[in-house]
Length: 209
Ligand SMILES: [Zn+2]
Image 1 (cartoon, rainbow, N blue to C red):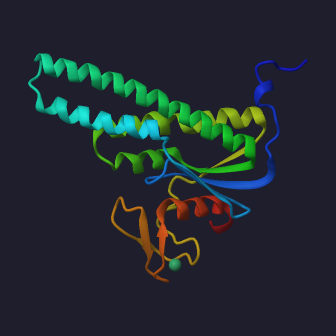
Image 2 (image 1 turned 30 degrees about the vertical axis):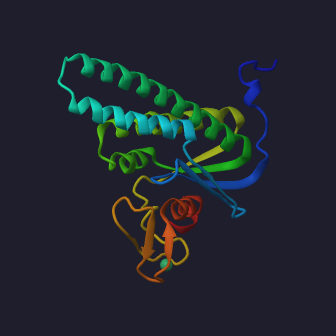
Image 3 (image 1 turned 180 degrees about the vertical axis):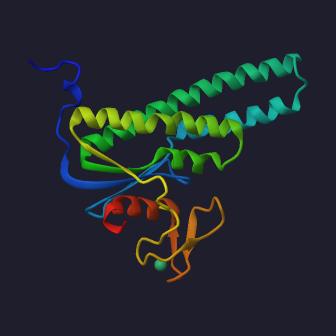
């Protein structure tokens, strides 16, 4: 008997022999490079970006107001509403991207999410961190769950693998400012996109370790 619950996700991936490297990035939400050298970048959708901008503005407002005043309470209510809205949009985004990955590739390689979360938390501000975590925290479990049902292989890359520090083309060391989205190779002096280079390294991880 068919498992009714599992049936919607039981379709085979459209590219069963294709391997994908997935980087949860600093610049873009998710960067994917596959074994056919195709790349897809998933940015945060515009409504989510707008909501995050408004969230930041409201937080600034809140910090300027006197605690327990009318204006303070109003800003706080607005902030909570925006936070809930952004979090649910981010979760929806996680669902869409993980659905795409599982429906497309036969093997998905992803970096250890503790490292991804650390990269995000380098952005300092607490609310941005917690918002980023709302997406990142859900990404791994959501992907794993969907992949298992679709019988797609997920490989978690070693948590100490420095995917953002090795130039994929020449294995030279990449340097740049801490949160820079562009990095320069010490060996061949080429400038690369941090997330794009990381997705290459994650895709090829088992081959180069
Ligand atoms: Zn290089």
